[in-house]
Each structure stands twice: as structure tokens, then as C-alpha cells.
Amino acid sequence: MAAIKSLMTRDSVAHLAKRQNWAAREPGVIVVFCIVGVVAIGLLGLFLYKKAIARKANKASAV
Image 1 (tube, rainbow, N blue to C red):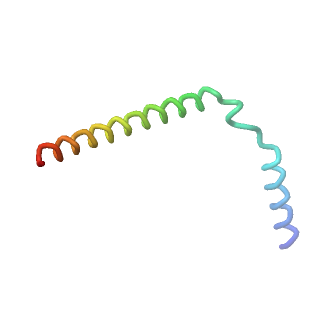
Image 2 (image 1 turned 180 degrees about the horizontal axis):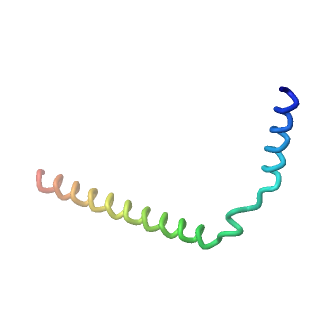
Image 3 (image 1 turned 30 degrees about the vertical axis):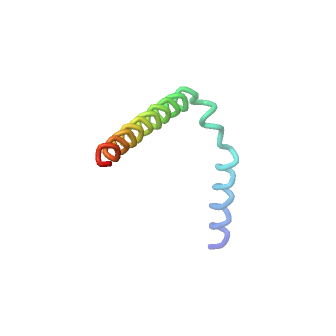
């Protein structure tokens, strides 16, 4: 049983060593991920900015 396990381990290590750089082969997907991330961060920033402005307006009207 130990021999089978060592063969499986060897095959797994060989498979990991043979892997190529996925990001280098698929640059378009990485660009799309970056664009989506930038848009999401921008929308989140806009949402937080509007919340902060509304909070300041409420504080100013209460005082």
C-alpha cells in the first residue's frame, strides 16, 4: 500500500511541476478581472462618498 501511495505522490508532484503560467497564456481574462475590479472599487468609493456627504449634511442641519 505504501508503494501505491508513493506513486500517487510522485504523479502529483510531477503534475504540479509541469503546470504552465495560466495568467501568461490568458492575458485577456486578467485584463477583464482588473477592469471589473477597478469599476467595483470606483463604485464602492462613490457610494461611500455619497454616504459621507449625506452624513455631513445631516450633521450640519441638526446643529
